[in-house]
Amino acid sequence: MSFQDLRIETERLILRPPTLDDLDRWADMMADPVATRFLGGVQPKEMVWRGMMTMIGSWASIGVGMFSMLEKGSGKWLGRCGPWSPLGWPGTEVGWGLHPDAWGKGYAFEAARAGMDYAVDVLGWTDIIHSIHPDNEPSIKLAQRLGSKLIGPQQMPPPFTEEPSNRWGQSADGWMSQRRLAAS
Image (tube, rainbow, N blue to C red; front, side, top):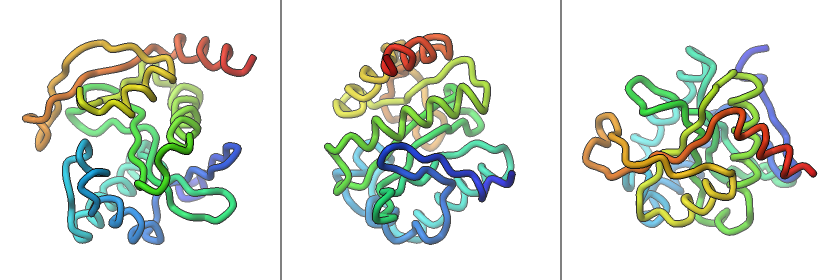
């Protein structure tokens, strides 16, 4: 199966690799100073396009990249979530970033669970981290809800070396136990 055919469905979401159809909503999210506070800051559409091409290229080259999150009923792009492990990254990460109009609805938790399952079940990752700015309370709460624990401060690669970041995470075994508890 080609990466372009990859599709994961949850109760309310479709997760699939990004396409150019996502550009306008992705650029809208990245133009919002609140939404981008912990994602590297506001970016013009041209930079967002390059970032999307990086994600698409990662999927095509190594089979790892964040999924675009689409609302199942409407097809509306809600954000990105999933496995991410570029060169120099502090670990194998499942990360997320949502458009502001998708905040507070449980979409990030639903998508992150599917991303964690994909990382463990398909990619065979033995550890999963979440790189979270110490002031990013919503992401900290999500990491905790996923069963991840604070490991401690970490150094991010360029161009994020000056950004404070904490590593949250858990082992694949921990995640498998966590999801069994959540399913019962």
